[in-house]
Length: 304
Image 1 (spheres, rainbow, N blue to C red):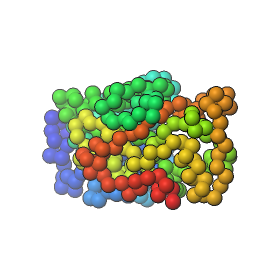
Image 2: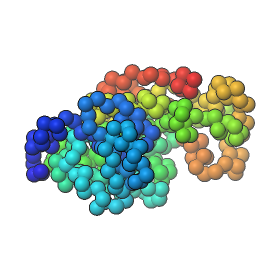
Image 3: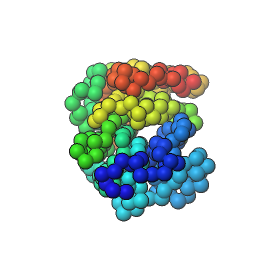
Image 4: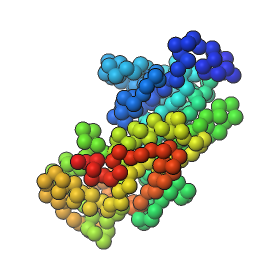
């Protein structure tokens, strides 16, 4: 297909319906798949073992790897919408995977819209302040810095004159859902993992996986060009209170409380990093522009 041709114009009628490409079709991506109507879905997977399970869900799997850009070439020019949920590599401060994806998409007719699943960690520590999308980002961890790099690459792709793609960046906090692997605090409570004492505690933010999937779906169609959205529920909870609430819900012992000084010597670095950032995310833009009505407005209802 010529690069200046509409992605729909030269195709037979059976291909003129919208075509969604999902990059990173894990739990949330599969929830998005279940919401599709009259949309053909292709998912990139690096695991040949997942081909049959994806086909069983009505998805056309394409085996490829974001770390091997040549394996992505057959996807160029195919999609009218793209949902990018693949994480960056575990090392470094940049995301070469998002770079490889955008370069592939530039080779032929660009999609109409793209949605990127980022992290609320790009804001860094906000000392418990309310945080909307206008706040300057200040990533602390390399993990968050890689997401900042990916966000920038996505926006750059959206602004290219030759593509003019509506790119939406979703800043996502802790994802939870019963039945999702690691999707509830139950296992952590059973291990007796401590939380911070009240004076040292931090605000934490949440989104149910079903509501996140709906936000992804709506952003594909309603997201404004080069726009960022906080995607979180209405909960306003300190982390310790969250685990206390879950303990009562599950009939388990509440976790022990320790000081921040103790945590710095007793807890692994990854876990400690989540206890070093405090913010309360504002989701007004998500509700107003994407018109998402949360099914689980607070985390207690979602866990129950």
